[in-house]
Length: 419
Image 1 (tube, helix red, strand yellow):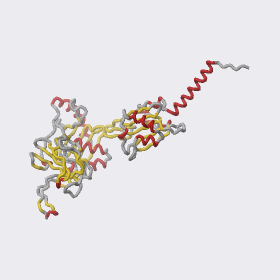
Image 2: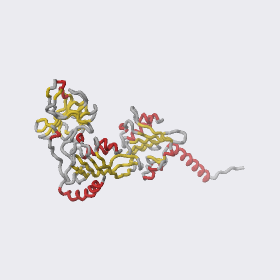
Image 3: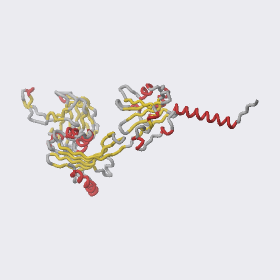
Image 4: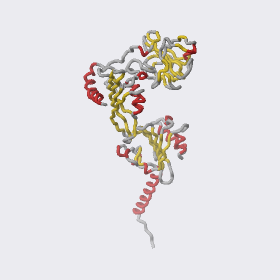
């Protein structure tokens, strides 16, 4: 009895068999085509099953955080990847992200195959609440950065000062960033936050960012603010001109910039422990008069010290009771000096901008505790910076005044209606 085989049927069977094996191998070794492309529609991200563009039901998922001593290679090796492949992955990733920049405490996710092999397939590193890095170890290695969909929510806040701005805002559960933005970006040049009075008040209209509908991801911007200090109302409106492009500047009702030539303080959220006082008496020196020609701002060792205005570093050294210090010449009239640093971060000749970190708080020289002694020169003479009428920044150009007034009108009306 002869047994014959139809060649066409034989070839078809082997084709189907090979195709099935290929599909099985692909499922084992790689990510499906559907998974390799991030799913960016909002409903996908809000689904319980989908995160970072992947259906987590299709994987064994391990959540972890970057620990001290961790490196990208060590993390992959710990998860059963061998060195040659780790090298190729690192090479493919460096075009997208510097893997040396993994920061301690940042979360990451590893996705593993569910076919029993427990093979690692995908690494997801969360740079912040919005941005993340994805590396796929599939048939081909892929690396890309992505952003979660962000929802912008407009909010309003109002408060009356009982002790300090930060305590009042924190008591209302307002974001810490909002406190910093109010005190450092908007009113840092016009209000001395060390001398707030009980009964001072504020109002603010701002926008917050949220991811996955409910996870707070920072302040988008402050559109308008109002601060009543010592009975005087100070309005602030964020207005962008073609010259300023995307940089933020705040103007009052008349279009005058709130930014002054000098910051009120070289340290964020510090306290004044000793003021400029030419008649100061010290018990340690027999109660004799020993003038204090600086303003001391108490802060923990290592706290950043900021340049209070643009200028050129003319001294960066250590000398006697001053300890480590930096002196900046701002123009022909004004200079500032910052004493008792633990570290100096600028050199003579460096040009620094207002708000740049120039050193760290310390206890070098003659000092009984960690602080920065801030000294202020006007025409070569040390003076009290809080008693000086310092120059303003430039006002809004006249050609934008009409547009500016039309823009702020509804914002002012909203501020006035907040109670």
